[in-house]
Length: 187
Image (cartoon, rainbow, N blue to C red; front, side, top):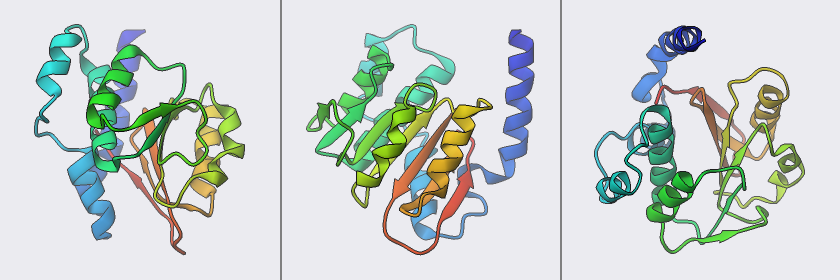
């Protein structure tokens, strides 16, 4: 089973290879977001401390936690919503990314929302209340069925300005522009 998962990830990575690290992105805003937030490889100040706190964190889980850290650091949201299905590691990385952010139980009017497409189908009614510069991070979008359909419905929302499909997770940025931009990115 692990070999099949590895092969599937390799094929997905090769399909997205031409879209990695900002290649083919013409928008300066999207290019900055991809190169300085999504695909940033330089170590941040808290990576060493967090790796000492969670020594068993490796591979994709570590990449996702670091992505959450960078997103929280970039967004500097006053209020952040995190679905209850996320681990202690994810929360620790989010909190270290922005220590001033308050974790709340209602995603409405939050500027940073982290949820699972698999377990939070009720988000579809709330996304319309997100502020203009809100960032929605959805995990589990690579599955087929309801999860993939939910991600497609988020991408189709008129208030979504940019989406970044990172295979395991998706990042949607809300705003008020006429044009939508959708990108595939390897992390």
